[in-house]
Length: 148
Image (cartoon, rainbow, N blue to C red; front, side, top):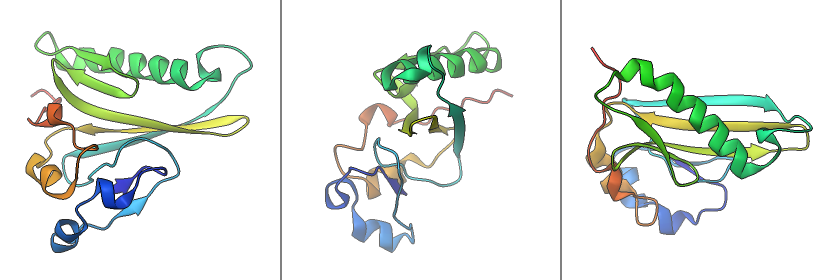
């Protein structure tokens, strides 16, 4: 599992359960909530130049711009059954179910934007190793986004 740079480990992670399951706990350079990694969790990263103008010049517009692009890319894969939407500042959801969390790290001329997609993750593991506030009850049911 990977903890955001500003998060308090003892408030985010049930370390005893993580150790018992053999899940390593790492810290990343970007913000955001703690993410449990494993089969069924797809990670992606974008490294982008920050232009002098446009949506990538500030944190909130960058989040919205990239997540809208992700939604647009997912729609043809999902057909008409499910519609991905941006929810909050850093989440993607289908209906009330969050399936993606995202974060960024910025420097003067470039940014790292990264996130996860829950495809078919073992969700009970999340409840066993994360503590509130990182655990999001809207993630309480698996969302398989790849259609057959």
